[in-house]
Length: 390
Image 1 (cartoon, rainbow, N blue to C red):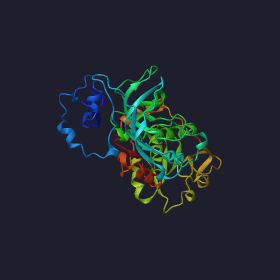
Image 2: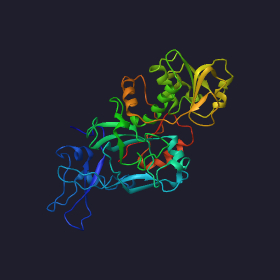
Image 3: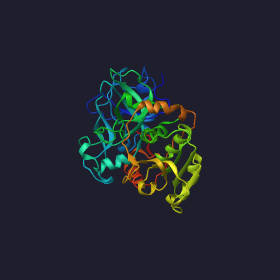
Image 4: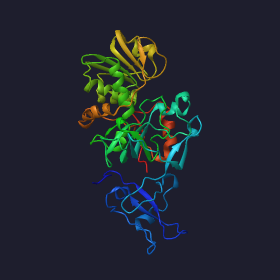
């Protein structure tokens, strides 16, 4: 089985011909994870020459260099250490550090170990790094990242639905604010409970899939909690954002909305319409709360609940993701659930629901700090994605 048909990363292997030899050979991930190890060449004491492909890569920057790992001929081991981004104190983007000596997380019986190919950033990542919920956070240092897509390289003894080689995606933290994992997805490897994952939609590449989990789960759960159903109308505040862009699509194709309105800046109005909005409102020119139309549900992804109350019908609901809550608004913390992703996969594979990745991305693994800075401007379109991860 070709485990990594769409991934062409390299693993660096040390030569063991002598204790002083510093040369390295390079094997592709495809070769490393294939049953017979074909596709790469192991150095021996009688031949200490780098393959031509390795010489071409000798100038690769250390920051992007893959993890050194020891292997046996047909039984590759998971490395002890990996490359990852982390922070050991709370603060701004400046506390983020790159390290090539971060421990690979231990895997539980109900977990799989994923070789990360792509990851996405979310506002909760920034708030966590800033210490906004440090009382319920896991101990520092922290490798950030909730969203992941990648390839299963190891399975726990209690795992039933996944096997090595499966391409998966998911939100690795079941409860976003309650003891989120110390080892997140902005790394080469991450360990995740089976129940939080789903098979990656066949028509999506890894970076498209990585941008979906937390946002699409938030969009779906919010609509369910608001009692949204076929024939109802909805106003989405922040329709071009990571969550808002998916609320529009789910409301239309999954829940059967009768009318969808959404707000954005001038340059993103066409995007709203392409996603399925019947009414695209330019918030730079129009105060949505002064318009005559009222909606069964207002989904507030930008923190304007005080204005949203003027646009909701009597007896309606307001889903609030950020900012102050004014009745009938309510806030919730999303629960990661692989079953929800699996339920929505057919809509993704049919093309009815599409991931929206910010056109500035994907950001390279070496540009994680820059990606966070961009995310925190609040001006991203769709999701900010990191890919490929070596």
